[in-house]
Image (cartoon, rainbow, N blue to C red; front, top):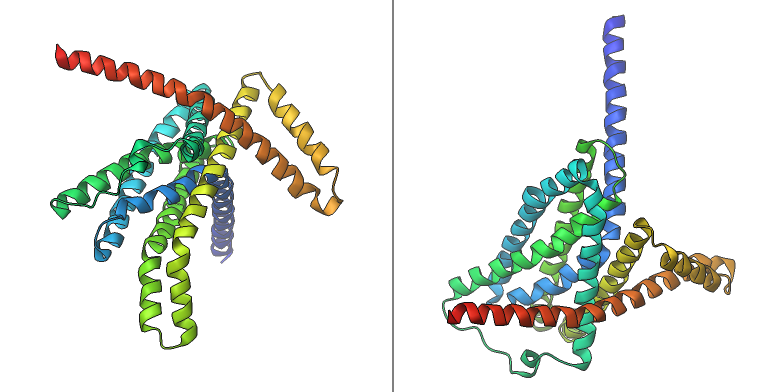
Length: 322
């Protein structure tokens, strides 16, 4: 009997350890996912355009296929690559993270720049989808999954850098939770966004009550503004997160003057308001300064990308002529 009681005690102890491990994984995954907010919001803002022009009954299947491609990107390619880096080349994580932060700054700054200097394609009328729907659908899905790979790489790199060093299994489990959780969050949100117009239209036309019909009309009218707001929030988040990552990377490389100065300025700003608001003012001031730095960095990168793109184009043209 005493042996059976001892066995139950062992089982209870193992269960407690397992529960604590699960709590640690979830807590670390939540913290890591929050650090990747900029890329997550941008992912949710970018994806709905891939279903534009298709029949309503194809929208959710397209989103589902992109989501499956995203989870494969994260779990089958990026997660093992991240663990290998962590195990054999941890020194490379910060430089790679800084590259990802710089890319976020570039993407955000380019969107800001386009407000003042629109792309030529933005001045042209929208082209309607023509050709075989199945082939176009496959092409759109393939393009979306490629774009998702870049955003997912940023998300996983940010998450990996946010996870405390521990066992490889703990890191793997945390990254897997981040990958699955963020994919569900992003593509669940995308599914709601792309079907909101249809739901609103149905409510406006078929609603039994005047309130329901009015709500439906409000959804239909409000979605364009909501999508614009989502793009603005996504752009601001990219600049904030990208700038913060790059500044922190500079500190890790021994150039911490900028980060320390920003913290000092944020603390000074917080001291000008009542104590109850100091924490949020401190965070807001720091995020704003990180975002301003991110915008400046991104605007610096834009001409560099155009210059290297022009060189690449000339090389390809010469190769084609030879």
